[in-house]
Length: 425
Ligand code: ASP
Image 1 (tube, helix red, strand yellow):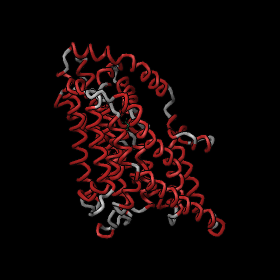
Image 2 (cartoon, rainbow, N blue to C red):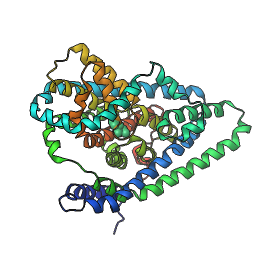
Image 3 (spheres, rainbow, N blue to C red):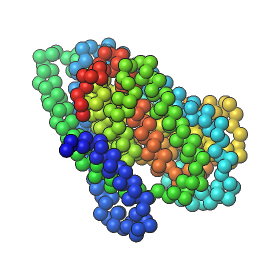
Image 4 (cartoon, helix red, strand yellow):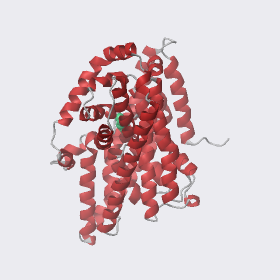
């Protein structure tokens, strides 16, 4: 019999996990699930996070030091950032257009609004404090935060990815500029270390079907609340779908020769993982692996574009922010002016850039968007109940967006292998 490919097994794990997760409560298996199944999911996510920082550090330094000159880096860097910004603006615009046409806020009865606000008030308190802490910083705080005062401190905390990226770029550039004969041993060290880290990713991924099963089996999704917020959720999902099925295919068609189906099949393992972990950062090792081995993107491009994307490019998150802000305003009976909607657009772009690539980060940043247009942030309580499933879906879009841009950049550099050259996964 033909051996089943890994992503097939991961998909089966995902399906079984969803079935288990939805039926565990009614079968009285909740305690068993929490004690005996959930830990495997946690171990799986931990091992992915464990390898994320070493992967960024080694692959980025290795990738940049392979560049022939610094001007290539600034070309790739400029294009990457421009594309990331463009896709995010497109994403929020799509979200805003849809939410203004569908008007999901009108479907929520005043009683349901009351009930939701009461149920989720406590949870909201901690989120509000976190967002206020974030907001009190000055306008250039984002830049200050990128430059660490101690690299070992940054390496010790997974939320400091941008600082690690900054250091790796600096180190890589210095390697290109230093005397080649002196740098040779350093180069071979990073070459080798990068190879080893990629092997570890492979090893972790063998465990993925079980990890994904455990993560989904132990998710407790409240279907009743999902239905109450159905139109709003559908609105978010529709926005995400437009991005995945219309915007990205068009971008790929215009800028690359990569067929869309081939692209989607290639990044499927990363999408499944993004769905199960709700974290672009935890998914990053697999996104890089898929980009290089299944899409044929050069290591030079993927090791630079994808870590940066996981940290700053969140198209799914920005759609969610646009739709949610307007939804909450509608539910409160507020009519937003065009100027206010433009403010939402701008703040949603910025806050999606600032959101950490971890579960639930988007909803914390949403508070900043709400406050920017004077919507009472306690309105967040209305949508907290369905945030997890929507987070899973928007993370899939975040990862898909990063991979789309990586394909475009690679294609522009002539570093996207033609389809037939890519080895079968
Ligand atoms: N979970 C998302 C991510 O990691 C961020 C968000 O909460 O929107 O990409």
